[in-house]
Image 1 (cartoon, rainbow, N blue to C red):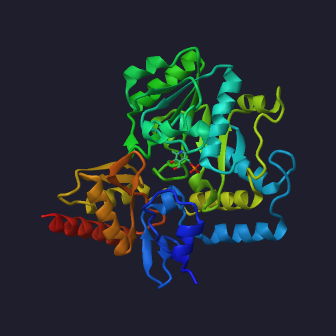
Image 2 (image 1 turned 90 degrees about the vertical axis):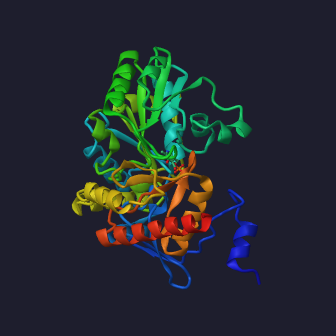
Image 3 (image 1 turned 60 degrees about the vertical axis):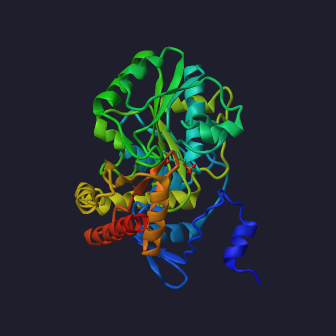
Length: 399
Ligand code: PLP
């Protein structure tokens, strides 16, 4: 009889030769539990998903209630399904008035795909601009706008007419012109190793897009739903996008994504051809019910209120000679170290000692810190202690 570990390696397609292989039996709040009941603080929120913690009771209840009514009924966009309608209504109520239509999909990459199609169809243009070190998902369209050649090379040909600029570099904005359908950008670059742009840059970007009739797509798949202390990170810059991408945290642990825009822009998907974007499971009623409960919990339980203080606490606690820099905003942070080996070994030590951390797709010399918004000060202090001890242990071994 093969062990679960052996079966995992045998029957589940692998994404690398070095999977974490952490076996988790259950999860609650900020904790994951192994088969031996060993507790781990999830200091990455399942990769920026569990903003409200794992299995938030209101989310769990909403899922149970919805499962008792119905699950899948029909392809997206045909039937009136109350969880979809109520969640879209709630999302638009917390967005600027100009963004008043929500198209639900199943994931972040699908939100990217839908938005790129929408921008091309609405503007009648084909030129797309993205950023170096950007990450918007792994499907073909999303891969085309990924700013890292290493991951793309083997999968060419990809989408044509995609151009790259440097994030936060105002001099590059002239690349945006009257032929440009859209600029797609993360409001804070995540997989690049948490890079925050200047407000002046973001405002100049908005201005240039408006001047040239280019649609500005903000990818808030990682930054959205309170992670940076505001519901959406674009609020820090006092601007709004034309198309907003959401996923990860918006399902409270269930798979759902969305691209949101003005009704006029979105309407082109319904005409010439009709069914301009199709998804069977997009806006699954159980996921929408979970999402609505998630957003309600964030707002009703004031989860964003303590984010700035928690960031300050993390910055205060994470003082160690091995840490070169702490970057980020709110609870989307990273600690910059020296090498991948150090990041890898320190992460292993942290996990062995009950704190889950990780690194980034385009920056493997920094450790990802993105705890759930509900993490208490005590848990933050405890997790920081584990991280600092791991850094010291690594340093001592390396000597
Ligand atoms: N966009 C950003 C900024 C992301 O961080 C991710 C996932 O990490 C995606 C898009 C893709 O989302 P998904 O993995 O749900 O396709």
